[in-house]
Image (cartoon, rainbow, N blue to C red):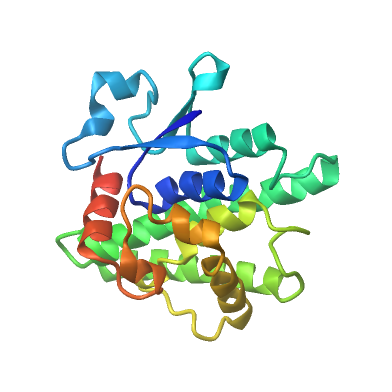
Length: 227
């Protein structure tokens, strides 16, 4: 059994969608970011960085793992799915996973801060992060023009990028002309595991439709970048 400590944010959904795709049994523990559960001693013993998500694998002597990308790799290896075993295939998946972790996630997070949350509208900062998000989306679109998925087969790389890209309206990014990205985004959205995973721990309905985010998503996202 996997214990999942999470909240309704893109990084949290990376873990829950992965668990749903793999069919691994897990129990969800909702972390109240507003109550700063992520800063409490009991949680810091699981995740020293004080962020979500984190997991504890009860089958492996309560092995605790934090950082969403590390969690996804661990779970994929545990189930022997969504991550190839051969060196070339594994590298292809991991490069697109790191693309999300080092690019898409941080840049969309900063876009959210300056576009949505910062009390003063600093237009050069908004432009800088929105433009970088758009550039990264174009990279994805070019890749997806030649491949159904980011790697040869559907993988944790697709899940990781989709969990962020799906909330593009909240970052103020225009994507209507990125037809390959849209095809990929819609295909993942229709997967039953994706729909189940983004309902953990709470469903955020309008983000599923790729429209403006709900109040819950807004509050969780804001707390995530502030804390």
